[in-house]
Amino acid sequence: MAGNTVDNTALLAELQAIVGASGVLQGADMAAYEEGARYGQGHARLVVRPASVEQVQAVVQLCAAQRIPLLPQGANTGMVGASTPDMSGTQIVLNLSRLRATCEVDAANRSVVVDAGVTLQELNEKLEPHGLWFPIDLGANPSIGGMIATNTGGTRLIRYGDVRANLMAVQAVLMDPPGEVVELGRALRKNNTGVDWKQLLVGGSGAGAIITQATIQVHARPTQRATALVVPASDEAVMELLQAMERDLGDWLAAFEGISGNAMQAAIDHVPNLRNPFAPEDAPDFAILIELEANAATKYSNLDLQEALNGFLEDQFESTIVNAALGNAQELWHLRHSISEGARALGKPIAFDVSVPRSRIMEFCRQGRALVARDYPFLTVVDFGHIADGGVHFNVIWRKDAAELYDAAVVQRLRDAIYTMVVQDFGGSYSAEHGVGPHNIAYYRQFTPVLLQQWADGWRERLDPQHLCGTVDLGVAK
Image (cartoon, rainbow, N blue to C red; front, side):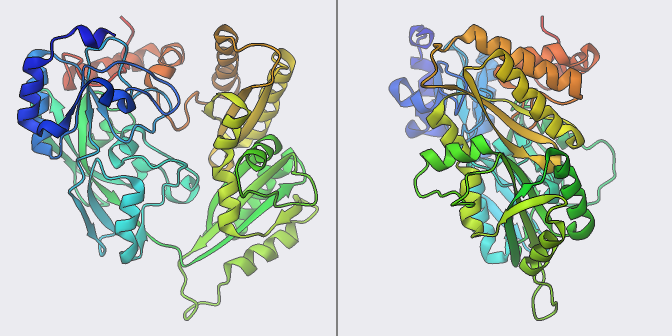
């Protein structure tokens, strides 16, 4: 490995003097930090785990002085390889999981100041006694810094927005001047005093600066929920149902998740303790997981969300829906969150995290499935996603029992075909939630206008003139 040829003796001592002996990893201890959750496998020179912003500053100053590239890394749950070192063995992984001392809740302001290494689950545990939560609902447990760097969305985006919409302020350590700490924004919902600089660090996958702390808007925990899994009467009925829900129940609509029959069956067949909610009938070809949420105390309101949802579904029977399962909410969400595990059990996933205008999402799914069936009949589509915001995880599985052996060239042709369809035919995005990262950089170059790539060049040159921070350069390819 390239990393093994570098003499780290002096550097190791300097880094240990900053973060302590236990804060620097080398050799086999780095393995968990060198492999991505789905894509990305590299070699790090060292892994450094600072526990304070002062330590981050000192590490950045040291590395900038010696022109050593840094890769910021949170919980390493990303899906596009942006938190994975490259194969050169020259990068230091700057893992922020120990940066977790601060989690200060201001319940009256409905905000929290939180260090970048705190995870989503830990944050919500801290918020629970205050009756609050950060409702970005994911199948993983990322760090807050990583969520900002990738602008995470999730299943409740339609009600609460993405991370960008809930971000009030960011603290970051700059690469130029090396180690300088900047505070971008305040714990304010109204601050119209110029450019919102913190947004330059949202979605950049850690390039240019290292996010060390954030101030986030949080929300009151719902006091009521109502959940149902419904079968639409047709593809066309999906949008009719969503529009009717937004018209009649829009104040409470929190999730509207599409699940294909293949996705549902994969989870049921391969994840323990799951059952078909429609049994004894077979799993339907397509279903929609609906959830309503409300903050309405029964002592002041006659609102009963489950009664409201049941009444709405009764009115929609035959016109937009033909079946419904009103089971336990936890059980229905467990089914939804188990799809990825079920898909992996079928074979090797070829994952597409895409979005199109939601009015065309069912049309895209039809055309995407038709393309796979026509040109790649040995592959299986296992699709699901966030119908209400136009996002879909259009996963294609190279099944374990396929007669054809896995072929990277075939996968590349499939990716090119699907992404071209998404962007050119449907005006969509090849990366709805997961960001760019090394895995998607070729499509960024292909589909992003050159002018915008040049703007990204200028941004990167100003923040990180030596290009030392991050794995992805979003400027024009040199």
